[in-house]
Image (cartoon, rainbow, N blue to C red):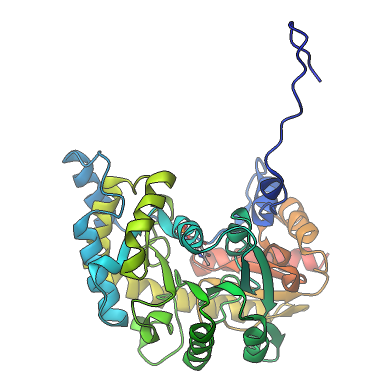
Length: 399
Ligand SMILES: Cc1ncc(COP(=O)(O)O)c(C=O)c1O
């Protein structure tokens, strides 16, 4: 320990214990292991290898040229809130501008939603395997998080509804649920949503529904326009349901940091205070571009879903032919989460894959203990790139 000339010895510095004990992202850990290595083929992050479509980039350029460089209202600019209210209304039923708040992407919306309803000692339940942020965010606020695991079997990942309802005890404060799910692609059925909503209504439990992948849905019969079942379809706008969404996935805008949430209007003023003390607002030219994405992006999103469906089928087919791989085609999102013989320590295996095969995958254990033995592959790219990745995996397994 260093001692200052005055003889004062400062105590060792440390973050508060809750923060210190948060689990670091194992996806990042693997990606960091690949930094500086040449020719790594990355499939570890949840984003496409394509840039945001030009009509949205052009809208941002125009907004910047026009001087959209100032703070905005905490809740977002009115034309974007209005565009989002129309968009959500068309997908899920009447939604007022007061029910919609613009955020700095989905992860900020999740944090704000949790800050609105959860505090120290509160009990939260999360369905896993799950993108780690949903489990760690309530912990930052001092809540205790119990996880309920999906089951893996002959039909892929499924929910044991009774087990989830049993975990949602009357003293539970909130449920964090993500469907379509990252990493498994599991999509919650309408019937299960209804049962969970009825149960949560009975006990006054908040539902924070992460629906950022609602457009990346390959079930249903509406083709590329299909939308995953949403809690917004069945809940009223003034009950304990907060739905989180994002521009990142359906419009390929990951780096823009723009999202929104739908919530009871009675919470909006308090949420405005939280936005003020977190980020103050989303960037103003980004919000302007968001209006164009929402109002003019439908054809793009439908095309994207078509390409993702084809990529999913291509990757599942290719992986199914690899000895030691156990894979199912997921109904939603943009990942294949497959079991791999020899992946009993998926973190170590994924680091080895980066070093020795130049293949970047995310370890299943990053998404909860039940994800151990699995790896996640983001398939938002073209078939040639997927083929190259599968070839590297085959080469590694066949050594
Ligand atoms: C389940 C889930 N929720 C939320 C997000 C947040 O995305 P963003 O913060 O880019 O909107 C992600 C990103 O991968 C995700 O997988």
